[in-house]
Length: 321
Ligand SMILES: Cc1cc2nc3c(=O)[nH]c(=O)nc-3n(C[C@H](O)[C@H](O)[C@H](O)COP(=O)(O)OP(=O)(O)OC[C@H]3O[C@@H](n4cnc5c(N)ncnc54)[C@H](O)[C@@H]3O)c2cc1C
Image (cartoon, rainbow, N blue to C red):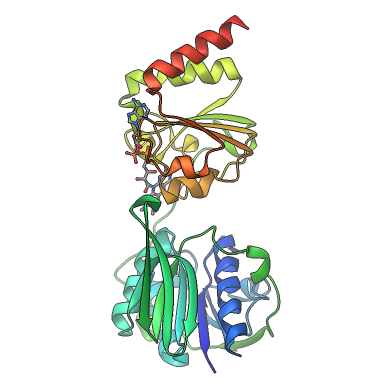
């Protein structure tokens, strides 16, 4: 019987949506092979997480104060202990900030090959077939990896709903590894963007600028259009990392997940991490001078106009009406 183990990612006692996607993927594999879906809940008090993992047949918990928030060292050590205890055929981890280092650690320490950026997954005999999205979605790679293996899954490719229920929900508590008492990494605190500045998740219209805007000095071109449309201005990660806009205005995997009626992406290439935050917008308009930019695959309307010409022209036109 095939065993698929899911790492349950959570924040402040709430299981994150990616975990339910992983459970959905695990349930698909288990259904095709009469297998079992295992899930590990690693936390100071895992009981609260257990209630939210109804898509798992067996939930393996480790309780320890060091697991209270995401300390990479603590979660890696605990995850390794779970993998060594249950010997899963497939380990599923989310392609998230936490999952990026956790996946590599589990792969190396448990001598399992790792497949990253997965958007499709299936088991065939003793082989894991995966499709991975590479180069910001410009290329899909298919791989065949011998089991046991670790797969890191890109969010947004499985239906969370399928991972919310359907498991037996048995709970097994495992002892915390002694190594959790002598960690080299200490989490001293965390900061969240100040959402009082702006809450992009509630915006009906967003004008988002990407690296193509070139510099902070050019931002008024976008903010004038935003004003003309009664929209909020937002940025891709490079724009935020460069300090051109505040973090609260970042859209994407490590920013806000938005669902406005109108989303104008200007000078944004459409990397998977950006798409994750905006692809459910009702109407997406892409302005990108590169006709091959991945954003065009998701946009309802697109133009290869130079944004430096188009944005002021649009603002002028809207100003007249
Ligand atoms: C763990 C992780 C988390 C991440 N989180 C996020 C996130 O939350 N949000 C996010 O956005 N990214 C995130 N990223 C980064 C992401 O991978 C991309 O690097 C980023 O989205 C690229 O931003 P961009 O599209 O603005 O820049 P680029 O990819 O450099 O694209 C700039 C685009 O501008 C176009 N352009 C240039 N000049 C013009 C012009 N004059 N007119 C029109 N078009 C022009 C170009 O053709 C190009 O397509 C994350 C990455 C990782 C690894």
